[in-house]
Amino acid sequence: MYKLLLADDEEDVREGVVREIDWEAIGYEVIEKAENGKEALEMVERLQPDVVVTDIQMPFMNGLQLAEAIRERFPTIRIIILTGHDEFEYAQRAVKLHIDEYVLKPFSADELVRTLTKVKAHIQEEEAHRKDVQLLKEHYRKSMPVLRENFLATLMNRKLPRDEVFEKAATYGIDLAGNRYVVAVLSIDGVLIREEDVENRKELAKSVSLKYSEDQALKYFALLNISEEIATKHGIGLIFMHNDQVVFLAASATPDKDTALQEAMRVLEEIRQNVEKYLRFTLTVGIGSVMKDVTKLSYAYEDAVLSLDYRLILGNNRMIYIDDVEQRSVEKIRFDDVKEHALTRCIKVGTVQEIRETMDELFQGIEAGVSVKDYQIYLLEMLTCILKAAKDANLNVDEVFGDNFVPFTEINKFTSLEEAKHWMTELCASMINHITTDRQYTYKNLVEMAKEYTKAHYPEGDISINKVCGHLHISAGYFSSIFKKETKMTFVNYLNHIRMEAAKELLRTTDMKALEIAERVGYSDANYFSFAFRKYVGVSPKEYRNVSDKG
Image (cartoon, rainbow, N blue to C red; front, side, top):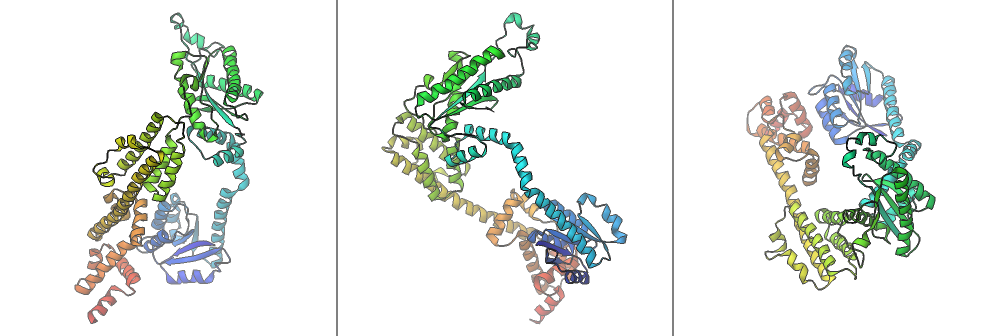
C-alpha cells in the first residue's frame, strides 16, 4: 500500500474524494487530509507519504508553493496537481517542479483513479528497475574486473578479517588458499639520458623501444601484460596495478618460508629479464617479508615498498628482499592504520566493554619473541593514538588522567604485558566515561540554547530550523536528531507549542485583538493563526478568550 496525503481547502472535495474511491483496491492508503498548503507541508515533514494530491488554489500556501517545498526537501515524493481549466496554463509553467500528473477540475472519481493508477505504475516501474536482479547481475558482471582489482588493492592497504578475505576472494574468483604468502612490487627504473643524447631525446622517445618513452602509463601497461603472461604460464601469482605500480601476490601451498620465497623469486626474475630483453627498460622488484597469515598481506606490501628504497644503495635492475637488507629475528609487530582507526573509533563512540575487547585484540599481536625495543615502540604508538583521541575530543588531560599523569615515562615501569594492557585499558575507559558525559552535556546544552533562542525570536515570522542551526553553527540534520531525542518532539512542533502557549497567555491577560496577537507570536496571516490555534487548542481564539473570561 502506498501512503497518500490529500490537500484541498474545500471540505466537500476532500471528503468526496476519500468517500468515493476504494483506496485499498487501487493500492493506496489516505494517511492524512490537509486544508491548506502550510498544514500539508507540516504533515509531509512528519509523515513523508509516497504521493501528495494537492489543489493549486489554497490559502496560506498554494499548491505550487507546496510542490516546490516538497521537491526541495523530499524529491522522491510523487505530486499530483488538481487544477481548474482557467489555471491550467499557469500550472503548466511549473514544469520545472517535475509535477508527476495533472487532473482537471471538475473531475470524476474514475479520472482520479486512472491518474493514481498511472502514478502507482511509475513508482512500481522505478522500484522494479532498481530491484531488477538480472540487471544488477549484468552490471555486477561488467564491474567484476574493477571490483576484483579494488579488492586486491584493499588487501594491500589494510588488514581485513580472515573470513571476509576468503569470502570476497571466492566471489571474485581469486584463490588465496595457502600456507605462505609473498607480495612484491615491480617498479620501473628511471632512464639516465647521456648528455650527448639530450638533444635527441624526442627522437629516442619515438623509437620502437619503450626505454626512452615518457609515457609511463604505456610502459606499465606493457609490464603488466608481460607479468600476467609469465605468472599465468607458471601458475604462480596474481598480477594487478596498485598505486601506479605492478603488484605480484603469490599464495603458496608449502608451509616452508624459504621454498615459497624461491618459487616466487623464480617467476619475478623471469619477468625482470623478459622486460629488459623485450621492452628495453629495466625494473627493480621489491619483495616483502613472507607471511603465513593472509590477513597480514598489507604488512608484506608495506615491506615490499620499503625495500625499494634500498635501490639507492644497491642499485637498480634487481630484486631486493626486505629480510636481506633489514635483519629481523621475528615478524615485526605493527600499530597500523587499521588498529589506530579501531582504537580511535572505540574511544570516541564505544563502550567500556568494547574497549576491553579491543585491547585484548591489540595485545594479541605482541608475541614472546618481540624485542623490547619493538614492544616499547608499539606501546608508544598506541599511547600517542590515545592522547590524540583525547585532544580531538577536547578533553582536559589533568582532569581525566590526574595531575601527576606523565604518560611516556609509565611505559618503562611495566613488568608484564598484562600490566601494560590494564593501564592502557583504564586510560581509555576513563576517556570514554568523560566523552559520554561531555557529549550528553553538549546535547542538553545545544537543545537549551535552541530553546532560549526560539523563545527570544519566536515572534519573528521567518524563524526556522535553519536559522536556529545557523545561530548554533551546526547542521540541520544533526540538530533535528538531537532535539527530538532530548525533547521527544520535532522543532516545528516545539515552535508551534511556544507560539500557541504565548497566544493563550495574551488572550487570557490582555484585550489585544486576534490580529495583534497573531503578529506578536509570529504569524503574518491572522486567518492562518486562527486556523493553527483551533488545531492546537480545539477552539478559536475568540472562543478561548470567552471561556477564560468566564473562568
